[in-house]
Structure formats: structure tokens, C-alpha cells
Length: 174
Image (tube, rainbow, N blue to C red; front, side):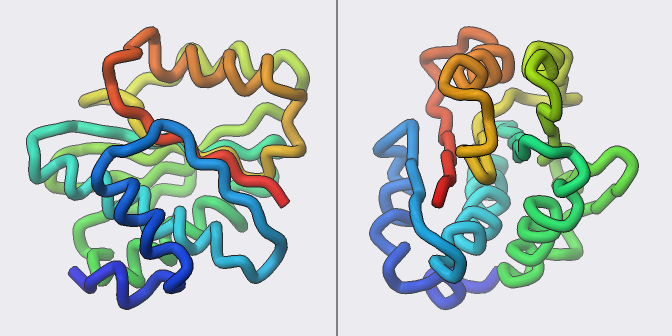
């Protein structure tokens, strides 16, 4: 695996240190185009899942967009890019129907979901993983969602009351 500090922007090094040390639960990343926040997240989520696996923790992730039509060309492609940058593509299986990335050694998954309509976020409750639990959530373009009630409901549905778990929420907005 390639050293992640060699492939992420230097201004994210302290944030990566913070993530690796499990210091915080929520990370609000702000910045416009070219800020490299999506690149950072696209590398960090698979990296941390692989580290978790080495420690016997079967973490999974969900990448969220408001509009489902944009998942494949945005968050899915971004995480595939991150996996490639880390030099670990042979350990990941990519599926497009439904969009899903699976870490082959353990079966951990990164799922891709949307909430196109106002009530779609309630359907997130049915999201299940073959093994482990949801530890990482990425909200791409947070400002497209219908406010914090929707965000909190999704978090509660995916974490299923596991408040004792360290969960990373990458809430991204411009």
C-alpha cells in the first residue's frame, strides 16, 4: 500500500492524523471546487476500513448523495480513484448494479445511496451489511439535503443506536 501522506494534499495531513487516532466523530469539510476534500475522503474511507480489518473490526461505509443519478459519476468514482491511488485495487471488487465496493479479504462494503425525494431517507433503515456495521458515512454536497432532520434520521437508521461505536461522518459542503 502506498503511504497516504504521499497522495493527499498536505493541508489534510493533520486531519488524517486526527481520523487515524479516532479523535472525533464528525468532520465538516468545507471548500469549493479544487479544495481536494473529495479526494481526501475517497482515500480515507477505504484506508480506514482496511486498517479496521487488520484490527478485527468489520466496518462498512455508506456514501450519500441527494440525487441518485449522480452517484456513479461522483462518490463511487471518487472512492475507486482513492483505492487506485492507495495501490490496493486488487483487494477491492467493484459492482455497478447495485453500486457497491467490497473489500475482498473480509467482505466489508462501501454502499452508495441517495435520497431523491423528501421521504426516501426513511428507506435507509433497510440498509444491511453482510458482516459488521456501518462506521463511515459520507454526505456529498450536504447542502442538497432537506436539513438536519433528514441528516439525523439517516445517521440514526444506519448506526442503529450504536452510540458507543466511533463513527465518522464526512459532511461536505461548499
